[in-house]
Image 1 (cartoon, protein in one colour):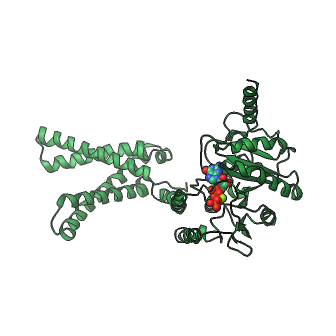
Image 2 (tube, helix red, strand yellow):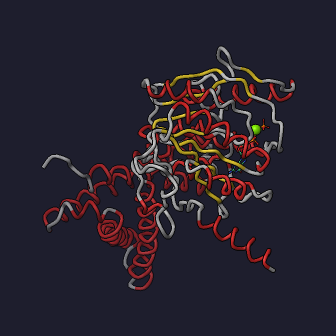
Image 3 (cartoon, protein in one colour):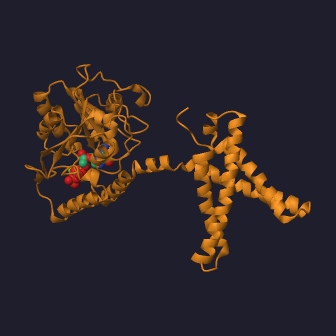
Length: 430
Ligand SMILES: Nc1nc2c(ncn2[C@@H]2O[C@H](COP(=O)(O)OP(=O)(O)OP(=O)(O)O)[C@@H](O)[C@H]2O)c(=O)[nH]1
Ligand SMILES: [Mg+2]
């Protein structure tokens, strides 16, 4: 019974010494703000000094209980010699079934530089690294595998490269002094194949380093702070280069060691994630630029208003022609004008409401209305023209309704664009 109580007590104490897991977007703050944490702010009482350390090194782990002690010992021995009291190690464990976080938490009692985060809600190597950096206090942020495959001495070369002005220092297997110890031909082929594919899909990012697959690097906080990161899979370095402000990159050779304990977590899933990540990074910025150029939300509203105009047009035509017996052409002209008025009111109040805020007054409204009428008239002429061209020339006098549908789609775009540029134009100069 006593034993049970003391085990529970140890567990509770270990839980309370853990670093709280940040929630929300994967954004690294410029300075540490408590708002990124769920509940209470992170406690730094475990650290010996209150001064922020120079280097924050994240160690992502999953089922590495057999490696944890050795990696922490190797890192502290090395860094205590070089930058004593000026670094922190942040081990981010995804609630490993082998209790990696518990082993690490126990170690942190005797090693105040070691902080341990146990994630229970999120999974994945890349997001683990970012969550670790989010609680980091150092100006230089780094990452190293927790399985002893990354030789720790290389950290010192990377550190001096970054301190000498590089925004990013990458440990590379493909520069002088680098290599892989005992990889099979298949693994070498897959690794190089992935790099080649990356060069094709994302040359501006992948082509900037000799080893884009490296998971061992250091980056200046300023280069990635306040950028919304959105990684997928294992390749966190691509995310840093792709979304950060990385101007100068240094590379340091290293030999990727063989695993001696624990198991690799690499599966085919990582290759699929890698491809997905490349495509996502490729489209970054472009989507935003496209949105800026083409205001999709406005266009959708414009389309909905246009559709409402069709119903108004039909209803008025029915009322004038069928119910009141007015001649068809006159009824149609009146119906079209009522629809135009309907569309104008809705576009003014909804589609372009933000622009209207800057163009108040009845005079301005009347000018917008007249321009809208003109644009609609030009649209009508264009509609007839396009319909004739498509029906007679493109389709060889067939598919009249399909031709009309295409004409309507084109004219809607035309109307939208002209109205955007003319009727609801925003002028920067007063
Ligand atoms: N927190 C966290 N860490 C992970 C996850 N997957 C892998 N890791 C850790 O990330 C590091 C690299 O993972 P490995 O599976 O060794 O991948 P690798 O070194 O590229 O490949 P191998 O040579 O096959 O070992 C190790 O420290 C893992 O424990 C994960 O989902 N979450
Ligand atoms: Mg490994």
